Amino acid sequence: MQVILRVKRQAGPESRPYWQEFSCEAGPDSSVLSLLEEINSSSPLTDAAGAEALPIEFESGCRQMGCGACAMLIDGYPRLACATFLRQLKLKEGVITLAPLSKFPLLRDLHVDRGVLTEDVKRMKLWLNHDAVVDKKELPYAYQSASCLMCGCCAEICPNYQAGTAATGSAFTGAAVMNQAYRAASQYPPGKERRRLLKENVAAGQGHCSRTLSCLRVCPLELPLDYIISRGNHMYLKSLFERDKSHEK
Ligand code: SF4
Ligand code: SF4
Ligand code: FES
Image (cartoon, rainbow, N blue to C red):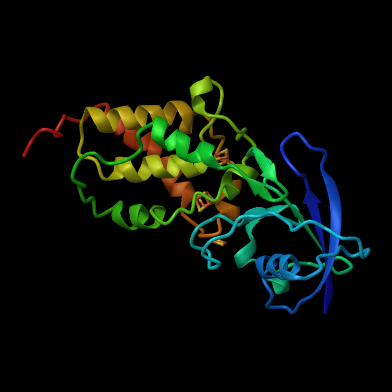
């Protein structure tokens, strides 16, 4: 079948955005990413009106839901382009609308800079600097949480998330960063460092989260974000009464 890709384009952060339509042949099992690649590989590259067009800029890596690079708005919903197939979309008059994630700084076309997520992880030091302690109850959740793609779909849908880092004093780190905090905290021995990490997570994450759980609905990996978010507060409160075991053998 013939479909139209309606793409929001913008040459750079300061340029004026515009919409451009591209026509291509697709089947129910075509992914949105494969359509973008097909359009970019056509020579000459023309839009649906036959005018010459510049290649569409977007990010992709693994092409199999493993890197999170291809996150974008597909028909207004944050999704991975490589894991969104035509059969899953309600095509209105054969049109698919693509736009960049809106919560991150735009670089060009569908390509955004999601570096703020890793900046927050670095600033809050959300990693283990100690041998992991295995808590059997948390292990399955910690294991799942480790697969987070940092794709930013959860931040895009979150009513409370605005781009920026919590260093500004007003921003909220969002579910992706709370997920990283949970994983590190769930493997730390009781002690100052774990308490510090959990306290920062409550200040920059948990405390601003209104538990709407829209993030849970859009996460492409269906991570148990409801559990992960609620454990943050629980672990923090519990940590206030724990003995410091970080230096014990
Ligand atoms: S929690 Fe899910 S939606 Fe959010 S960044 Fe990780 S994989 Fe993406
Ligand atoms: S539960 Fe709601 S407020 Fe909290 S991170 Fe998810 S989408 Fe945002
Ligand atoms: S290209 Fe890696 S998740 Fe889509």
